[in-house]
Length: 473
Image 1 (tube, rainbow, N blue to C red):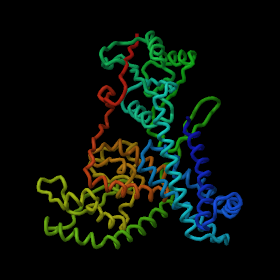
Image 2: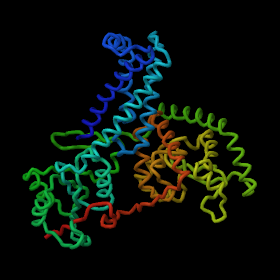
Image 3: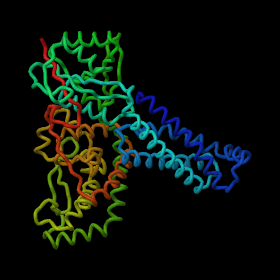
Image 4: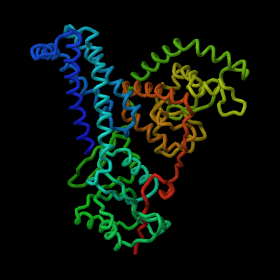
């Protein structure tokens, strides 16, 4: 299925859940018997809630991308986003009831929200199960990726994370004679292919779709290959060479048959920045006041252990401006680190002094991970885009498990996607998702594997299908 069709189907299903939840909440609230006459009354009495909730959900659903598939089957992300969206939904419906003088009890609305959240979450889990269940269906489209390196690797990862698209990755085709010979489909042999052999390979492997994920040195030969594929009924998909720009909300413009990609501005507007600042100040103050006993106790213990409670490090903030970032003086990886220090690091308590940086205005609660001046000096122009907003205590890259040891390229992708999709609801969802990771941190430290920022050859990755090398004649 296409992403838009999936999104529409899930939204329609949510509208059904809204109607069922509203009627069920009314029946439970009034302790009514379940027969046709009472159901008609419940339907009439619930009409306003259903209408207000449906209109509100249209906004919340698309703003938070709540179809359950965006991002690739991350249950924790789906749960926190759906919870945030449901809270926003019931608050807006309650506000509509108050403004329009519609008497609806808070218990009724709370029951409606709880029922809807459970139904919507179960519906998404069911949809995920179905798509995984039929992931090996013989009618799936067999895909061959033309290219190697970062773009091809990322495309392969996305295909693996989205079985709902109906794609089965068969392998890769290298369009350069200078590349190393790599294993073909059976891993037991290797060979070189010229352009005359490629057509036979496509037939042999029953390829349905060709994905071009790299620029090619011989465009004429590649155009001939594409033309042959189209004549045989194979679908051809092209990944733009400057694919990193897509995080800036691309829009396709058709200029007399010439496809153009238009990229919107990636910065937050002044109004959005003001909203984010008010949110940061409010939540940071509440967290500091509520967590002050824990902060004081941790500080005292660290002072006894290390001689001082706090330390500071130089980091780059918005537009690359340096600032001193506070944190507790704990060293989890040190040989003499105590159990207390390891616990503070695992639970993220060591990062809580950064809340003072948030109050000061150097940082935000949610945003890109702050990095050192030395690393920022080596940024490419694309990576520097992550400096358009303040760094955060947590963020989309952080909840994906990316830390200081990961490459800036890997984090930039998530950071720019966060900037593109920013809203207060997104910030709330990411903070909740950060809290979701705390129980896992207690069990074991999550292993993080640093990914190279270089274009690694795909033959080094065991998670992908085998590779094919194409040689130009």
